[in-house]
Length: 126
Image 1 (cartoon, rainbow, N blue to C red):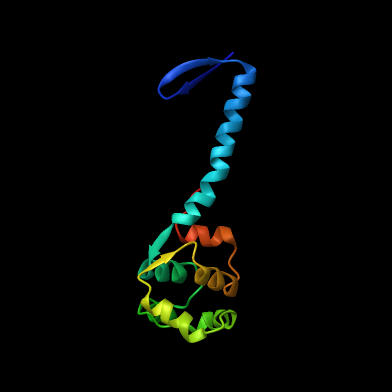
Image 2 (cartoon, rainbow, N blue to C red; image 1 turned 180 degrees about the vertical axis):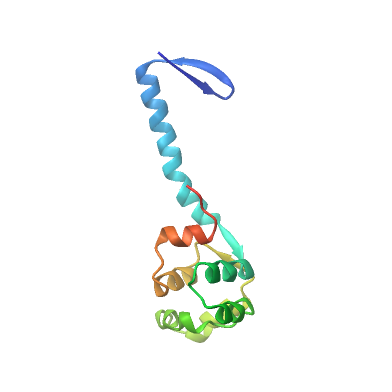
């Protein structure tokens, strides 16, 4: 028997119950990241600061990006859009950067960031 706290109550768990409990905790942890990614966001200003601190954007480009201008570093990302002007308009009008946005995925690929590096920019801590 193993003792385990659950909702403030001390329980005696058999080996099978402990195995099931551990599997449920692992499943919950595995599902946490996709849920977090679907809701994570930063203000455009905080996102640009994070890009600067991570060395993705030089300081001058981070300032331009925070103003809503398209940074030169991400010029190749525009190529993935059929209407690059539209992508620039979307960026210029963005106040909140969503971790799950397709525009952000293009920027991530252009900057050669891993999913984990992008998660860290948004504050994910495993």
